[in-house]
Each structure stands twice: as structure tokens, then as C-alpha cells.
Length: 407
Length: 138
Image (cartoon, rainbow over all chains, first blue to last red; front, side, top):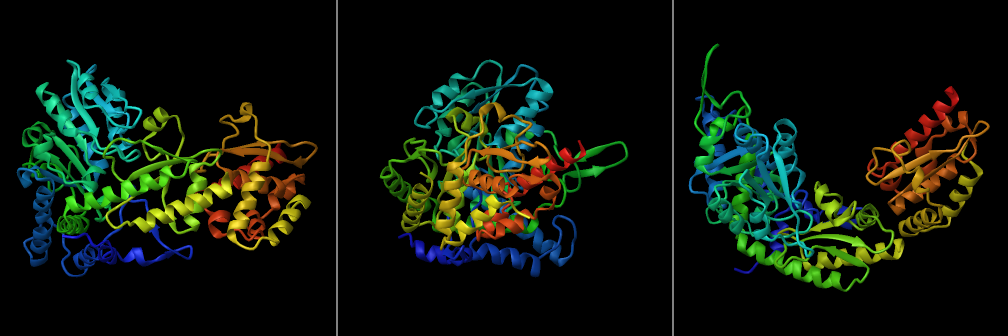
């Protein structure tokens, strides 16, 4: 099947709007992706025609919304190739997912002096929940730096594992450098040593086919809003034996079987970990987004984006005043740029915005990595399934204007 | 109410035709502004609420207000230079009377540059007013 990017762009209504008088050139997909019409329609229909609380009532709408909502578990299981939909815990996104693993699995098990191995490339969402354990119960965080080209050596991650290491928590794809990490080797090595593994799929699941059974991780987290779905949706894959080790984290409705004044008994996983009324319509929208992605084919999306990445690398290489951070082989189409001279990432972002080009300027919620790179901020252009070579050209033209104005 | 230095800047901007030229001029003003010495780039002079780093150092003597400032972003440096001119040599009560957004609006800068929360203009103006109010009270 050929990949018809023009037809795909037509699925995303926002891409036809103008910003500052220019056609929108949206290159901030790493922060959040735009939504196809099918997702927007699903959200509208969810509220207009299908809405009720889930898992509660016996009436028509409650059954309908419960069916639609619960069907998403199966869609996510298929998207991630999980062994069973019972291994999918629905939530609001990666931040909630990793906090849940920290509170529900790690906090009750890890003692003072136990270690968690992280890479320096992690997003704050895969750092701060582990800092809680460091602050509150003396858990030690061990960091593995990327190589000068931005790649992460799986052996160095495995070498960081000691007798007191209980968890390795690693991103599958750096949101700053675009580095794709060999999480399969890391998970296999960690498993041999009896160490649990969490893979942050916030970026990875967006850019490549994911098979959690092949990766062999214990936890895999995704976030809906980067997957072209609604914000406030997401999920964790939790391997069944790890789910059995988890304590409930947030208490409330839906996660209980019975409550009395003296005793509470819990629902089985995954509901045990889904307290309260969830993001019903958001989750239904996520299901539609994942069906949309699977309809296009993740391998086709990956091939399209690899073409964009190669073309962008070639164009940036022609600008001898632009530095690209990270050149790991096979990196995703995420480019952190700095400009020689005094130009600050915010200057670039402000001027590009005038040309209708949306990028992200800042530390990208990855301050340990920025410190490692020795910079306060970069300008990040992150491409998605609907971006084009013409948009790469527009970015390069915009950067040339920045250079003229700022250098 | 604005200073003579600011009125000159307004006149310069009147000759600039498009946003690129106006941005270029703001950037040039930023480049021409003397840097603040590192010794003054301390928590007390740092202005929170800006996407880039911003420092403002007041220089108040004999009831007249001046400040020096700096930023690691060039466009923001330019805005600091413009603000520096706007408040240059005003009496403290005049500082408090300046309507900074309205005055900056006279430069024909676009909405994004003159009011955007993230470039910290609002935070900078608040800091200037606070410095002047503290000097009045002292």
C-alpha cells in the first residue's frame, strides 16, 4: 500500500488552518499530536449519543458506554500485542502510568539502598516518580549516560544493574534526541538477573510498531494524546505476574468488590487499578485513534517518518550554523536544534511561529539530559505521520530567516 | 508619560514596514544593549515567569528610576532594551503611572511579542513596578 500523505493530511482538520497568516506547519508532535476527524467524531458522538458512566448502571446507555469503553482494552492489547487484554490498565496517560508503577509496585517492595536504573535521557515523568522513592524511602537512582552520538548502549544499562537493583526504567525513544533504544536487549538482560523492567513508550509507540511480548518488558506505558488520540487517555501494559505484585494505588469506586466499615476487598486487575470514573470518552477516542494508526499500518508510518528523518538530516547538514543534538543510527524524526552564536531556542521558536511553524523550545521536561548536553534549551522539531518533505523545506527556510535576523 | 529615549524608539519603528524589519530592529536593540555582569545575575535580580532567563537590576538615585537587564534570549534582550528606554530617568511616581502594554503597542509589534505571557513581558513590568513601589516606600 502506498502511503498517501495528502489523503492522510485531509483526515486532520486542524492542518488546513492558518497561523499568523501562514498555513500551519505543525512540528510539535513530540509534545502532543493533532487528531484525525474520526477521533473528533468519536468524542462528539460519545457525548452526543452514547454517554453514561461505565461499569455502573444496568440501563441502555450505561451498557453502551461500558461496551465501547471496555472494547478499547482489546484494541490497546492488539496495538501493543499484549498476551491478554487483562494486562491493560486504562488511565490518563504516561504520567499517571509511571506514578502508578512507582506507588503500586515499587513503593511497597523497595527498601533503603535498593536501586533503580534509569537513563539520563528520561522524561521527567520517568524520573520524578522514582525521586519520590529516593526522598521517602532511601531508594538509590543509578544513571546511565548516552554515548556522544546520543545512542544508549544496552550493555552499559545492564552493567549498571547490581545485586540491589530492583527495576530498570528506560524510554524506548528519547523525546529530545530521537534516539531509539534497544529495549529488547535491555529487558532480556534484566530479566536474566531477575530485575523488573519498565519501558516508557510515550514516544516509541507513536513512531514504530510495538510488541510488548517481543520486547519482554514488565511494564509498558503509553499516552493517548501523542498517539493522535484525546488528551487524558492512556494505558499501561502490566505483565500478569507483576500485576499480582501490585498494591492498589488510588482508592475509590470501580476498584472495589465490597466495602464495609471494617474491611475492603478489591476487584481483580485491571479494574483494581482503575479507581473512580475514568476518562470514558477520551478512552473511546483513543481506541479509535489506535484503529486509525493500525489502519495506516505502524510499519508504513515508521517508513514514512524514516524518509522524513533522512531528508531533514540532509537539509540540516547543509546549514553549517545549525547543530543537531543526537545522531544515533535509526533515530526517530525528532530533531533538537541549536544555532551557532547567540540565538536562543526561544528566539527561534518566536520567529518560526511568525511563519506558521510550531516547534517546541525549552528543556523538554528532560533537564538531566540537557545538563548532560551542557545546554539550557533546544528548539525541537518533532515530525508525525502527516508531515511532509515540503514542511521540512519550510522549516529550513524559517531557520534561514532566524539566522539572518539573529546571527 | 514615556521618556524621550522611548519616543525616539517609537519614531524609528514608524519607518519599519513589516514584522521582519520590526523584529530585526528589536533584535538589534538587544544586541546593542550592554550585557549585565555575571555578578548581578543572581536570584535577587532574576525575574520568574519568563520562558527564557531574565535579570533586572534597578539603579535608583535621587528619586529617578533606571534599570539594567539581561536575558539569554535575543528577542527578550531587545524587549528589555525597549523597556529600559521606556522607564529611563522617570520619577518613581511616573514609573507607576506608565501603561507599559499600551506604550509598547505604539511600536507596532504584534500581539505575540507585546503581550505574550511566555516571553515574560508581563513579569518584567510587574517587577519594575514592584521595584519602584519599594523605592517609594523606603
